[in-house]
Image (cartoon, rainbow, N blue to C red):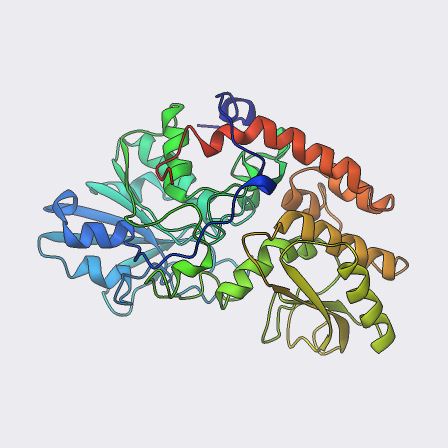
Length: 419
């Protein structure tokens, strides 16, 4: 089933502007994930042959791998594992094709969904009674896990296999939505363009699933919702919220890195290093031609003058051990989110790329491609074109507001968590 953005944005609804939403108080409520709910009551899984799409970041409340916790349930037959980008262990590099394998602990075969196949093959689902999906997403359209889940649901629907999605928190929270929508011609073309949502959609994977199923997507899909999660929670679900943290992908090594990634992932579409190959990927951004203390200070000051909410930039130097500019000394900035409730990731990312271009216009470049990778990350070619023409922030802001008004129903019609 091919989703269209027009169909996905057809419903109505209203939400106050993100900038006007009140700051939510920090919570001491403990969150229970969809996984922990089925571990407490495994009735939906009993006497079934289960296929599980997951990764090692999908932990139970006591820090156990979901794979192991589900395999240990009596009268549950875990038959097949399916792994997204980065593999089951979550250690493969971004974009690296991962082969099939066998889980060393449970002995269950692992079928990779990032490499030779983007979704389970019907033959791999044959003989299963239920496909269970448990993935820790990060709340951005361009992150590939939601797209992998949706493709798996499509194949399951084609062979009439029921699906149970175990929901997890959106670590960016559920109050703020921002950025541009995805252009229709790119929808579903690559793993980063599987969702017809805004850049930062403010939804859990369960809510995305519910919204689409209400519109006729899939077949016999159920969601095991969380207990205790509220839309005002952000990365505090890890720690204060009681959930253990494991990197959902190899370069998102901390909750702070997830927050920084929400902005600096746009740098991936340029020839500037986003800090891969350092001890702080996505928090460190720079390039060899940003050379000398004066230029790094000037870049940090220019970003500081943008009056971006909830974020701080400091001059930085680093030498990546891998990826872009490996082995070369790079100058740039370190991005630190100081108030995640006021932080606007898309605005910050656009301002960051603008400043990088302005401070080294003769060396800065967007990566080539048809379309350019930056466009797939940002969702609209207008963003790159505006930056290339001198950072026409007004044009980008107007496009974001138009898309926000059209996409606001994602925050209402598919909601599972209302507070």
